[in-house]
Length: 120
Image (cartoon, rainbow, N blue to C red):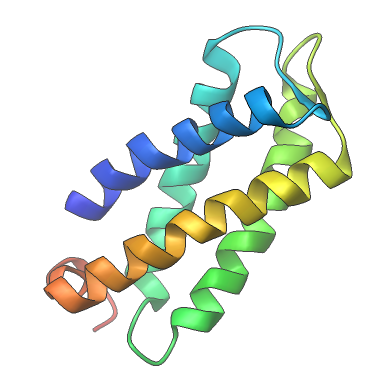
């Protein structure tokens, strides 16, 4: 559960920061990147529960990157007056994956992923 709470804070925050620093990631309202980040956090958490382990860190990071890039690009279509280009979605996914590296290492090294994982 700690992993989910961490993702629910960091993922929306990463998308908000991306919208501030990247000109090709623009949201019309303050809640849009937060809502999109929360949805991506839950999806990413489910992936971590199923696949994250010491030997699968690279696979889970690649999966997080693809899900984040596609989710941000397509998810932005749901909101009115929002503009996210494919490059903007990819760059935002890179920012999120960088944060995921630290999260995954912490989850594995602290033993939390073994306690939370469903396929262990």
